Image 1 (spheres, helix red, strand yellow):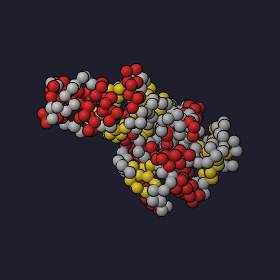
Image 2 (tube, rainbow, N blue to C red):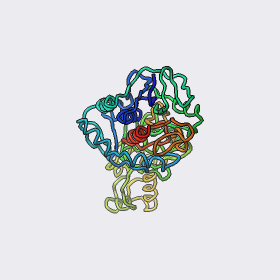
Image 3 (cartoon, rainbow, N blue to C red):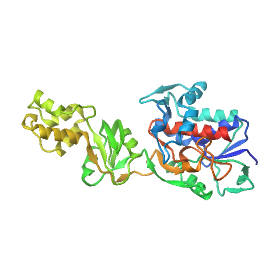
Image 4 (cartoon, one colour):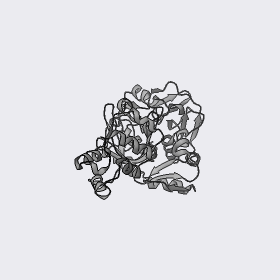
Length: 385
């Protein structure tokens, strides 16, 4: 069964690539191991698919080469994908921070991609367990399928219960391509040691600024029975490395000296009461108990209040680890961008071999950025096949 291109993986990037190439007149087959395509799309955004982000820019992506994503993202933008969504009559809304979701169901995005594939005459084969990939005489062979081009779009190992594996990396290494060590990203962090007491706050969330190094995100943080989660924590988890501290500003936006001002305005007020006015009660009590003992604000020195203020603005947690690939939304690392053309996603060393989407060492922030990379990288390869 001869084709112009075999695409391994029927996820966001693979289907986008297939549709694009098929509509250019290429004979394309998509081989998907699962019983249906787009399984990760279906669970994304609480079932409504956060399909892109209006604020997409290269600086919202992590990679060993931060410049690699620029070409594809510039040539296929969030606006381009939104136009496709509107062309298919899919209603959408912006939630927060530029995040776009379907009004209805993520199934609409999968149906749209399949319709685009059908328009290009793409064949989609599900339940295909890819075994040996052979390469010779300028052609790739997988069982009965053969083509001069092969696209790796099988994603990374995040969310293994959805069938995710490290297959893309194994295949890349088989062809001599380097792989940047993969690690879980957009993943909850676990706490132990002196921080373990904060796990008693399981279920409590607050608007905070979480930071690791120069990476800072203002969104909600959530305490869990294992540690820390919520959007702000998931964002910094992509930057966090074992041994590093995560700093949390529990009262972002407060001007320096706000506690001493509170003392002068109401000297008989207790610190716990001040915190309770701004934070969930259980969190306020826990923080107050772990600060140096301060009774009424009027009885505390300005120096003591400034110290408490500084601690609240940069409370340091020392995670013991992450909840791993099982709970990670995406993967940092993957097939090295040094091996690929940023314009076509083609391998420099193996003619006809391409890699796209999460399989590549390009990882976006939370909020639709990873889908936009899937669309953009898929289009880049689809236009080059």
